[in-house]
Image (tube, rainbow over all chains, first blue to last red; front, side, top):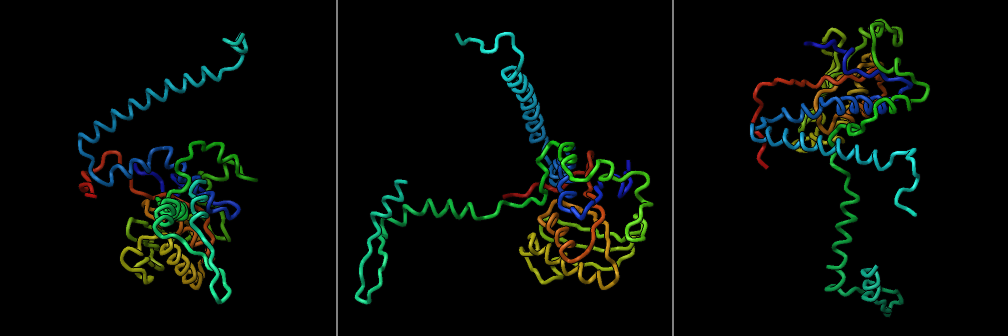
Length: 87
Length: 206
């Protein structure tokens, strides 16, 4: 699907703040995965490389999820006993 | 700390008959000891490799946007009415466009009218930068400044900018345009990205 030029992927510059507008644009492009996809498709990715990359990404996502849960658990507030294990 | 003590120990001042104090160093000891330090300071002074995408790694978009002073989110992104907005008496859709293509080895800036008619084209190679120097951010900035000054003579003061590619000139050429005196009203990313691409060229051997 073709996107409208100057509507999609566009940031308007306000108050002469061009630098900030560019940074916001880059940030959005980066977080949406556009730049990664561009870098990845610049050169042919061999099937083995692709499999390895995808496996790595899967493992990392699982690890990140677990770690996030762990950190949230340790940093949780409102526990019944404020300092567990400290007598 | 230890290195400094040792170095001071190795350093001896001798008085030359002329009356000046001269610092002597024991070459065998001092040079290898300072080599590490020198390399570290050298690496610290070298600028980091510029991928041309400043701000890409930040994740918190919403907080970044709300950090704008006097800005609301609606004002930052175009909507249905944007093409009819007036910028210096000209409709947004009629403002000239500056196409920037920043590749690994060169940066090409191309100013066109809104319908795509060419007004001016400059590249780092045309600007006198040759070979690897073409693919630097300094070259891109210099090219953009010279392009901006030339375009101003044509009576063009405001432009929209589209960027293609992730070369070193991606950000610095935009900076150069503003330094040259052009007013940029919008920044668009026009990088060709496909999720089902043709088979691209083979990987570079390093």
